[in-house]
Length: 113
Length: 111
Image (cartoon, each protein chain N blue to C red):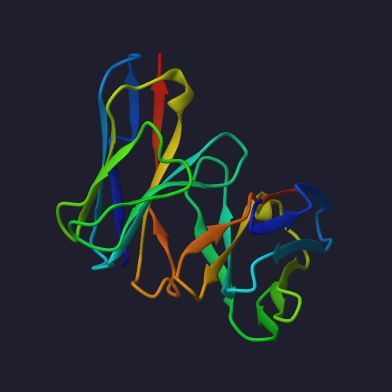
């Protein structure tokens, strides 16, 4: 079964600190995505990747970096965390055409204090 | 300007009733539409997809697509409390295979 695993599931970070959110997929999908979702709202795309070594900016990339060292792993990095980055972050994977189902991880709840 | 718009923002339907959710794209490059459902505190999961004009039915769920107007709708008959969730519409752009998400419709089924 398609699987996307995120870690950590919950994180409390201090303002100005560095935060790394990790994502691993066993679907052998080329495309991976990082979204944030604020309470009761839709998904906003932060960064995405078409494959190992590639990262692309999404709709709200400011304050975030991404890294795709392998087909399976995709990380989201907050170099200097701010309270406005408190949110739930979802990682997802999908096939190269974009026409297959996108599978989501269970999410990471990040609180920046 | 958001390329995929959903309406209504929220909807309350009595148990056993029909829920109708709408999704429209303003970009003619849209190719496929997806409907995802997200229960509170959970991650989104694919519900149904539609690529061709017409209608597709799976159990209590029916999806319609009108490609000329770039409009899709999701209808849930005999709504159950377990159908209460955030329903997200997504569209694939055939120019770059980008997945564009709507902001969702929050559906509440009242027992």
